[in-house]
Amino acid sequence: MVLLWDHDGVLVDTEGLYMQATQEVLATVGVRLDEAQYRELFLRQGTGAWHLAQGKSAHELSALKQRRNDRYTELLTRGDTYIPGALAMIAELAPHHRMAIVTSSRRAHFDAIHAGRALPGYFELILAREDYIESKPDPEPYLTAVARLGVAPPDCLVIEDSERGLRAAHAAGLRCWVIPSSLTRASDFTHAERRFDSIDALHRALRAST
Image 1 (cartoon, one colour):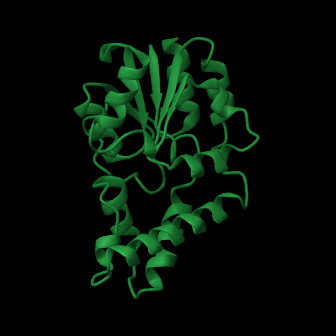
Image 2: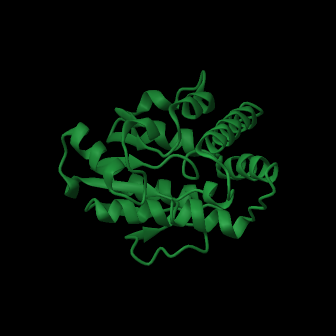
């Protein structure tokens, strides 16, 4: 079985930092982004929130996005964002499965999170936001991973934490297990093959499938 892992919310606890950076920057132009809006726009629809900054030019929006990205990088470098148990789980599974990360994170943010850490070395392929055109819930990220790995969809299992990630996996014809984060627990995971409430439970299930 080939394991295709989402990243933020599954292996690292970064979604709250991304929300914070986005909220702070939007607040400078008078836009209040609350948690409910963030969950809907980022974790369900995948559209982002820049359309809320009405009247801003493309140049101004580009500058806001860059400020958000810079602030997010700053927040990432303040401490360890690894979810407890994630590294041990990946290290144990690596000898038994081909694995890839399929993330909506930018490469620079991914690298900032894992600088000097062992986790990326366990993966055969890491796809970041720059590696495809359409982001989740579009199936392109997962279809790209399947194509680059040269594997058949029935041989793959996706691990996700968000509704848009689940929708992307299903649209790509892939099985999907979900482990909701604190921001995604209220999402609709009806079509997930399995749902787990802890990384330990996910780990046990994956170990049993090895």
